Image (tube, rainbow, N blue to C red; front, side, top):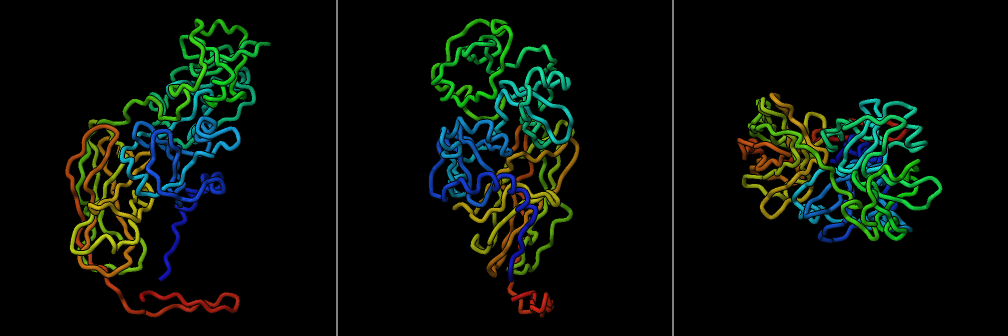
Length: 407
């Protein structure tokens, strides 16, 4: 029986696949190391590896703001590696979302405010059109999803408002009118950037701001003469914890009863779990470790996916580790608001008849707070093969097509 494509998955990957699909090399086995930029074939998400953690770029605009620091002059995407899912899973810790590089403008699609990004992922609201023109001219903005606010300092709240006469935020490149000397403004000192360092740190000429009085930007500090990872490495901003509540996990009242499921049917529900956050605070779920129990085997499953209602969490997974586990990373986080609960649904595609398979959750990784009630597993299901139950004949421009249920 033919499987159906999940259109929401296809749509979600368009923005990335159109931009990078023709540029990436073939998949290869490689253990990611610090400084690598990686993705898995068939998955649109791109990660930056740093400190043994993986940080994901939320969209093409965010990636491009850093691209010249992770590629070369000839091809800014040259260092993007396509690796296996297993190799990506070897980097078990998720560090967070990469934020847009300082010096750029961003706007979230759930609001009208335009922001300048400063060092440390701090956002500065642009007060009006006059301020935007005076400070940033025709600089284009990078549009982000509203959910991306949580990745910026102070959960996306601006730390200041910029007017037409304001000083530029820390993290901006500045120069005096009529001079070729470019300085990196770190908030307390201006540091002369040499020509070699400008290239090595991936700075862009379009982001150099001309000021009337460069001496207003602090004392003259030590020059930047080479690549400085503190200002060139694309990592997540300094973000306050999104939550610190207590999460309790239990079987949902909607959990399916034990019984038979049909092989070769897509998205069979194996378990529904209730995730409840305490009134003390919301909880952001960053990862979910799914396990298998029973007399069947992991080979019975073609794939496993997680859902919050109709919303898919992370990517569909097709491989298990040696302990019969799969770790699902949720790049943008899944927030359970304080005092509320959400239902986690585990679905699977079964390719082979089996005896007694149950799916459930062994571990949940959260941004902050605690998790109680694990492990939690659904009921055991038996995958069966059913005979051909008949079909429906459809004629399309004279061509007969028969759709059947069963085998």
